[in-house]
Length: 121
Length: 94
Image (cartoon, rainbow over the protein chains, first blue to last red):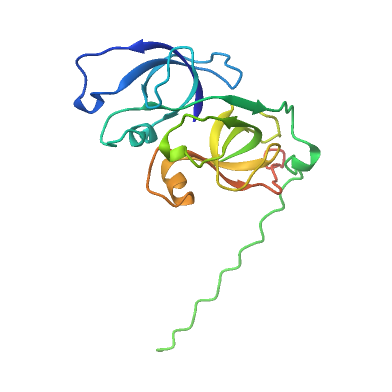
C-alpha cells in the first residue's frame, strides 16, 4: 500500500456498470511526510475520503478485490485514512544488520549421485 | 520478496474491513549495500516485526492471502519474516 493525498474528485456519468455507485477521487502519490512524488491517478474511494485527506491506497488486482464485488476493472482503491505516521529516521543499517560482504564460498562440487540400483533387476 | 527495514508505524481508524485487525508497518526497501532506498510503503505485519527490524516483504496478493490464511482480499503487501543475517558479496568476487 502507498500513501496518497486526495487532490480532487472525478465525476463520470457514463462508466462501466461495475463502478456505479462508487466515488472516484483524484490522488497524488506522496510519501509518509506528504511530499508529492509521481503522477496523479484516479482511485475508487472505499473509506469516504475527502479532498485534502492523507490516505493510503492499494494498486493492482487487490484494488478490485477491495470493492464489494471483485468483478470490476479498478486498478487503484483508497483503503484507509491516515491518522498518524510514527516514523523514525534511519540512515543506513547498523553493522549488525548489514549484509556480510565476504565473497561467497564456491558451492561444494556436486558429485553425481550413483544411480540407484533397481531391485527388480 | 524484498529486503526492507521497518521505519515506522501507521495508525488509521477508518480503513477497509480487510485491514480491520491489521498492524500496519512503514517499510523502506534496502539495497544490497545496506542503504535505505526508494519510497516507504505500508505493509501488513504477519511476522511480529517492530520498528528498526530488517524484514522480508512480499508484495503479491496470493502471498498475502496464504500468509494471513484468508481468501483473497484487499491486502497485497505483507511482512513475512524478520531477517537475522544476510550475505551480499557476489558482485565483488572474481
